[in-house]
Length: 116
Length: 110
Image 1: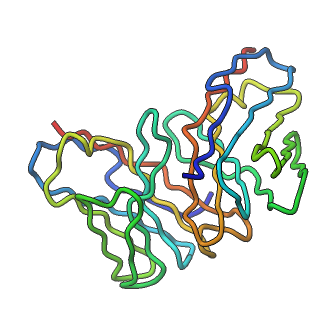
Image 2 (image 1 turned 180 degrees about the vertical axis):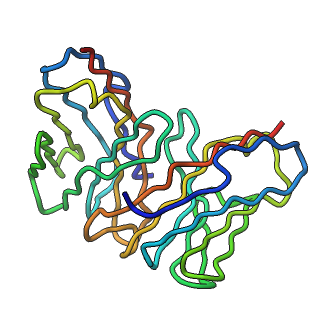
């Protein structure tokens, strides 16, 4: 298994509170991604990073921010959580952009967030 | 949107039978990938097929791609209870993001 650790794995919070999810990798992969998974929507890309301090928006980035100060860590922050952000969040990593060459896109185990 | 769409959305079979899942998409692609997700776990990459390939094999998995019909199929032969999972296709075209379908649930009954 790829060395990807997400924390926390489960979190319950209240509307309006800030939340930070952490993704830590030990593979030294350049690219890191945050997805959310919701019933009926599959996986949707929130933000991604192509290097330290290099990040960009995905298709559902509103209400989320990210930071990558070290190769191994990619943080996802909900500045003011809303009930619509209740979801399962997955971190993924790859050596090449979206693993287009090899398909080697590795996922973490997910972080289940409930916003009350 | 080039989002792939899996069909059927749910499939229940007996152990030892073959399972076929289909994925249709809308725009031209560079590659198509299949992933498996066990309940409560992250996605695991199964196989990637490029747009210039028609068929690939990996163990009990066989993937076909028909770019003229914009469709792909994933065949799992001699299924096992451990194959019970959700399966996703994901498509990528040019510099576009990797877009996942909504997934389909396979149940293999012992």
